[in-house]
Amino acid sequence: MPGRCYSAEDYRYGFQGQETDDEWLGGAISYKYRVHDPRIGRFLSIDPLAPDYPHNSPYAFSENRVIDGIELEGLEVVTVHSFSFAPFDTFAIAYGGDKDNRCYGDRICKDKDKWETNYRIGGSVILDLETDKIIERKLHHSYTNFLKTEDGYILQTESEAEWQEDVVFDNGAFFMQVQGNNDGMTWGWNPGYIDVKIDMQIKFDGYSSDGLRVFNIQGEVYGDRYPSNETYISDISGNKLFLGVSGPDALHPFAPGTELLITAFEDMSRFNFNVVFNEDDTFKGVSLMNGTYFSLKEWNAIFYNLNPQSKETGTNVTNSEVETDYK
Image 1 (cartoon, one colour):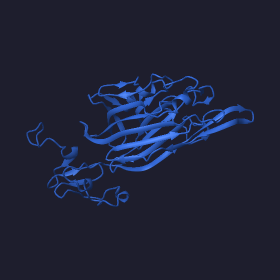
Image 2 (image 1 turned 180 degrees about the horizontal axis):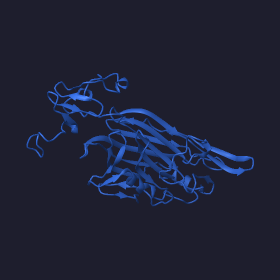
Image 3 (image 1 turned 180 degrees about the vertical axis):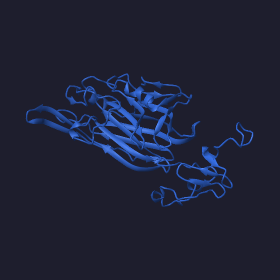
């Protein structure tokens, strides 16, 4: 807009933060993967993802919402992960854990020897942020060894996970609930189920000062606050970005029986922040509502350094800080 902060001649960026090429009559707009002609409200080349969306015209802009629509570029895909784990060699007298040195952010062991899993139950869901489409959802069971001898393990147990309710992703609102039978006891008894629920919103929130896409993520994780939990998202390159973590709320010998047999609505973690994406659709960093910015490495370090064995551990991302003792 002439006279508003920048002169029309000097300001190269305009509509939806994209660069304008004034050599074209009418000013073509250069998006990451193709060029938009504002005179007709259409792209000049086919959408590279057109085969995945046969219901749309391959030349359409923002599903034909040419006035108020936002054109999201590239593979707008993130994966939501949640894993509950016991950061102990053994716990509650007779339970096999996931090792004393198990920390938040450790690589999830699920692709090699199944008897080396380092969690109790888990779930992951791949989301297409452009279309509110669930691309894939997957449950992660765990396996526990006991009583190793020269002849091998005397007892091995499996903790199966299941979707307690349908996974939902609609207009940016996402909900998933994973439940597992926690067969981690030396005699195979199952005193209740581990239960984890994730309820959140993830929506496009505009562009950063340097023209990068920003998504707002806010929500909560709740359920049986036992054992420990880590919930994070990953981008198309597999980079992690933490949403929240929590420790076990009881460590006494009868904790599985007392903590997993009641209605699972205990607070575990909360979050409300913006995620900045690089041009290649990977995470760049996180900004809080007050403008405080963290690189991806700085952000994750906050969570890596928390103690998963502590009852005091629980995160709440507020407008201005990351509280680490959220009850």
